[in-house]
Length: 205
Image (cartoon, rainbow, N blue to C red; front, side, top):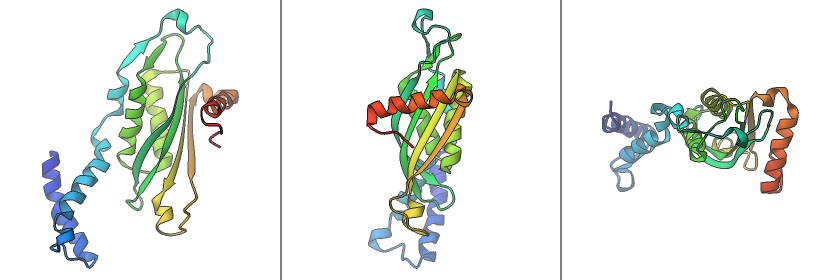
């Protein structure tokens, strides 16, 4: 089913939602809302039909002398902005992803920096929970690049906590995922944090 067909099926359902909320879908401000709302929902969840591994197929190989055996030097990308949709309340949460991986000195494989951001975007554009998204990003990098280690840190603000329930406007949620050397060598995470401090002036946690 293509996007236009899905949108045609969504419009009457969203019109019914407006009616159940006590609104008049025919009034001027809401006349085209089911169509716009449906189009927005398809955009928010377009990661469902995208494969993050497709982005990570774009790889490069470092020369042997560029990455000597035994090195634990990292490739770090910080402040990757994202907006996602909480699957529990269908409300947005937004934040940043900081990640790093250590290329495997045997294969010396790396990927383009823009591809890491695209991987984050694929997983963010789904109905999500932050905890799962954090793990999915780390797993995708680990499985595609086979690095010595991967770490992902996600920091986000959840509007389901701001607009309803406990109404915590200043609260942020931080989640982490580690693979490989980051699990077995705690000093690597400290090193990662130190690099981030150089860039931002403070750590994540």
